[in-house]
Image (cartoon, rainbow, N blue to C red; front, side, top):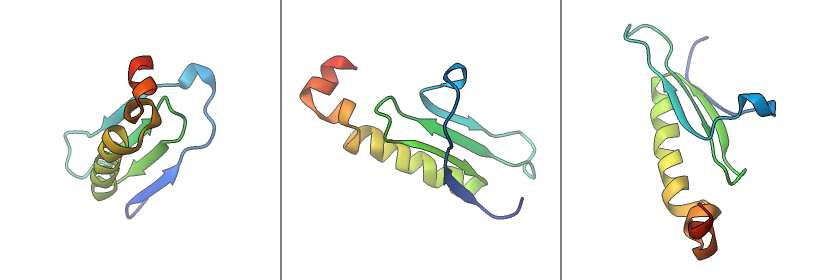
Length: 81
């Protein structure tokens, strides 16, 4: 696969749920870097392939986590998390 891609991830079976950021960056520079993100709020579920797309996803995830996630930005969400 060539180029960087970022996409919404299709529905995952419950046994495959992992909340948070998961980056796979092999030591070989030519190997494909990829990342997946799933937030407990249910509004953020993304996947990226390629170094530039993974870097954008990490920055976007950080923004979601600190600025827009309803579980972290509301007072009641803060207590629930």
